[in-house]
Every structure is written in C-alpha cells, then in structure tokens.
Image (cartoon, rainbow, N blue to C red; front, side, top):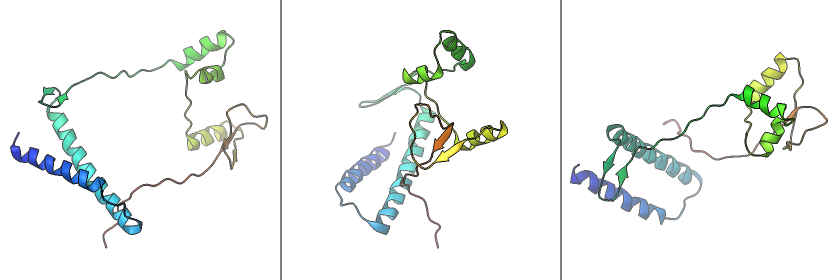
Length: 154
C-alpha cells in the first residue's frame, strides 16, 4: 500500500480530531454540516467495504483483519409452542422469561385482523402487555426522531 494512502488517512484522523473540538452549529448550518459528515462517513464506509472485499484475513503492525463466525439460528415455532403448551405454560411465560421477543408489524397485523373478521382497536397511549379485558388493541404514541436527509440542489 502506498504511503500516500496512509498520509491521507492520517490527515483524515487529524481533521476528525480537530472537528470534534469545534463548537456545534445550530439551525441550517447544523443540518448542512450533518449532511456533509454523513456523506463523508458513507464514502469512508464504501472504501472500508472495498478493502474487506479484497482481504478476508491479514496481519498488520497495528491491526488485523479476521474472519469470525456468527451464529444464525432458526426456530420451529409450532413445535416449540406445542411443547410449551403441553407443559401447561404459555407464550406469555416464554416472553416473561426473556426467551421470546415478539415483533409486530402494524399494517400486516391490521390486515390479518380484518381478514379474519376480528376487531383491533387503536388507542392514543402506550399499553402494557398484561392482558386487557377490553380486547386486542394497539397503542400509538408518536415520538419525534431526528434524521438527516439530502435536499435537492436548486
């Protein structure tokens, strides 16, 4: 690898360090700065991925590229739930034990209930997962979040 690439990375490190000491801008300047920082991060991530596509293992003076394994499991939900129910336990017991996490998709859940002629209510507050005598419902609370979007150039 050329010395030029290492000098460029060193310059980037110095610039990132200097930038981290600058005061945080506000308003439109903050939005523009966030967009530019994100664009730089994206280019650097693309470059990093290109390196990883070429090298899967390597030993450097300060760093190493290693390939590790990550387990990816799949579950036989029907058989698992059947065994749990056979022991007199429930899905709620699995959730309480931290063994299962449910993830709902609002639109699909709503379509499922409609397709099976069931009522699904929506309330304007968070609900607790403790079983409700009023029937199934979904709590909708809209919370703000911040993201950076690219604006069209005029």
